[in-house]
Image 1 (tube, each protein chain N blue to C red):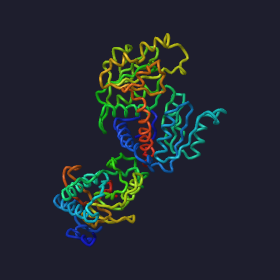
Image 2 (image 1 turned 180 degrees about the horizontal axis):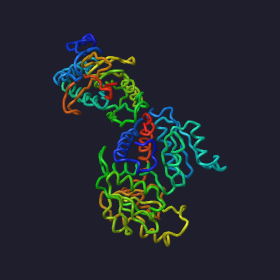
Image 3 (image 1 turned 120 degrees about the vertical axis):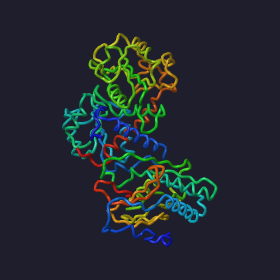
Length: 209
Length: 312
């Protein structure tokens, strides 16, 4: 996985450090076609790593992990010719920073009727950052049942982990500084596909915690 | 949202929808193997009940426990209140024990409001005299929205709700009138003139005295309990006459539109305001209301206690 995607691939230099010069305006780092290719590759990697994805269940973390999980399921289905179960896993009630902000609206948890017991659950999210979302997702899974294995697929890994969390499938490694904001836009939610990197405005919420 | 939930009037349409939408997600949890969330771990919720209650107290207790809060149940019987301790001293005692939220049921209107001025924690009104019972109104709104298949994010716009019976002694009626109109429903109160409050003209609803005239134009009929324990005078000639004019029996129910539902906040006086055949009919949502109560109260506790304290 990591051998295939060295920390700085073609756009790596643009990830920049804190001293990155230039205007604060956001910059597109992934175009729709690149997002599509990354997801196709991840779908194939899931197939390889799970021996044909027989017991795989893709669970997206709201908001943007959910359409990503659906797209991965579609791609696996195109290759294997059979449907792959997918759903959503809301982690709001398991966050470790609930007490730091006003209570927020809940997302939806939708797990196929067969449940998660014995399945290989692939957690799907848009951006992997501190790893705290993934920790919360593991807790949430624990309350739903006992999967055989849990794997993690993310479209963007932007680094700066605060917990021992490692992705199994990465669309793109995007070295960033902590001052930057990575936003994944998806057609299902935002009307277009793009990955954008920009400077954080003082009030702007961090993406992909 | 405010830090406390004292009155349904405190809730804007957006607040109310946030509570209902949150409850909707929480209701999905009811069929999971583990019906518990870690969200309020380490928080203490005190159920301070100065009046008898079955469903409300148990509902709040279940809601708090499903969110992993510690629950302390307090009832006036067997406590120092029986020795004459005042509400304020009781409240300060609870505060000293570290209560993050106090759920209060009291026979005096305004008790929850007074309490909110004395304690640092969150106060949730679980019924104060004949004043308000906002979580009951929320669970009724939630039940109506589900029954009419309105999706998450939508209100009750255009639905006609008729609330029938002892409005004068009912905290449920006032909270429902306020909340349901906030959510866009058209509310009509039907009651004998003696059982309507003096100021009912200022409420955002219409008032009628002829139940039969309103029945065919109701999507929801909410029957109120005749609160004989609060009646210190004769408000109607006889129970039979009340029942004939303002009770819901099978004949009246047959006049309802096809999709209409029948609600009752409980406890019911079968044979007085509602006939047994109506209470047990498929139109009746009475059992569902109780189940929804837990989800709605979980949503209220989560939204009031789950996040950072709102900056006032």
